[in-house]
Image (cartoon, rainbow, N blue to C red; front, top):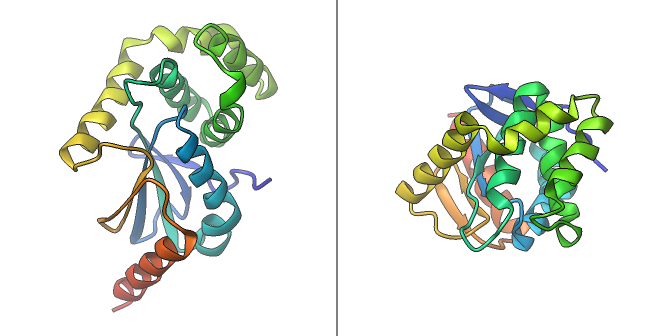
Length: 185
């Protein structure tokens, strides 16, 4: 498993890869979305190893209304981002990988166990599920996504070029390559 070694919090955004890169890949994700879990695996297996040194991969929260625990999970993600950006990335990765075993009534247990593994106060982490400030941050991402035309997850923008729902690594890589070439002009 790829560790979130390059994760940083910049301008309130959890960024994997090179936070200073000119090329940005913005990922609107829902932690309860199975297609997002597939995309996360593709990012870890293909995109980050190949482009992590030259591209900033920015996370945006887009919890869909049909998913019962997606919004509180996104709020927890924001909490972990602030506590430790690497933990924030790992929260997303772990939560997506364990989607089938998480339910609204078990989310807090999942969160507390994760916090303990990262040596973060579990009570403080659980309080994040009711934190109005974190809720507003998640809702701001959602509203920004809607304004950009996002309706499904994952939606990925490679320097503004949209990729909606499952896209192949080759399609996204081709767009990243083009963006990298433009950034060197």
